Image (cartoon, rainbow, N blue to C red):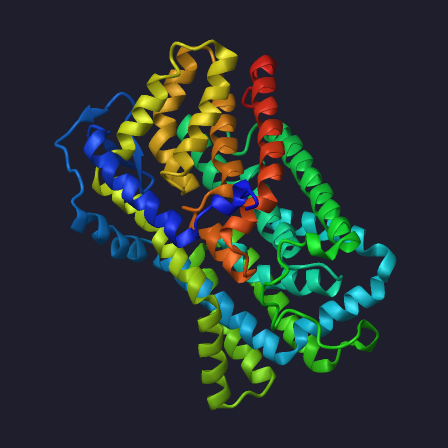
Length: 464
């Protein structure tokens, strides 16, 4: 018998997440329960440094472990709904034929010789959406990458590389990330988005590496189609239905794509001027469903059919988001998240400065699997890490950088992060195959990030 490769040992994501839930329940019996005191600052809970204390243990019973599942779904309801809303919106756009006609026309216009350029361009466009807009906010854009990737003769894995990976890398290394950098710098009392020059270099280098990685994968499967990691995946609704030469844009296509583009512009306006988040963006998607349905003159019966068909396609991803959040719910019920954060910070105090910076990044990577929310991690760990960093001579800006890359880069491989699970589901990519594709890229970007953190120590990386 042939020896199994490493990726063949990766369990199904449902099994993986349930295993993490069981582990969280077991750890609640082994790790002492503890809590930091928290105060409200600008309407958000913030940890009081030095306030950690042991508290009464609340180990989870088997029943309480399973109770964490509906609790997780309740906590993640906003992300679950945006997955459904974006899926329905794309379903209406697919039925209209507008996306197929627009992308078919684009690829035909660029010609066969410019496909590598298109891959690089789309990597940076999706990466920029992660840099400036956010993470789950971009879920609705993912299916566009699927149509585009198939149109240039590639597969759904490249679509995930163009969209999911680019959004994740852009968001994780963003110089202006409002959730990690914004929250972290407010806690550290640094000027908002100060030190952006070094994070900007890291972001540009990381997206450039990803663009090279995507082009390399495309060229590999063009030479050898059997090397594709998405050979047997369902491409219905994504694949072009006719030869490229036949594609042109009609008035209906322009109207539908114009409505979609206008919706994206409204979302950008809301995010930047009114601090919109997931629920407001979901509402815009729902409005677009109605507008696109009216433009394409769908009957009431067709409205119902397309809606339920679209929900059926994205329901697995929505389910995975809730299951992923149940792990966090179990850790909070067991009161061990704060304990883990406290001992992580304490373990750094005796290390040399450079090693401590690396260890802080590694530790934050580990914490990301426990608290997948970037802003949640910032509020839980930075009030503890910042004083420790200053004690050993680390600038606050370096602590923020170590926190950001430890959290952000590991999002690429974090099954407990609802956003990446949802986006991969829209691409119809199983998580085990995603790891097979993305793990080398993750290691490259992670090493680049570690080098950047070490460089920040030697540069005395300050507030400006």
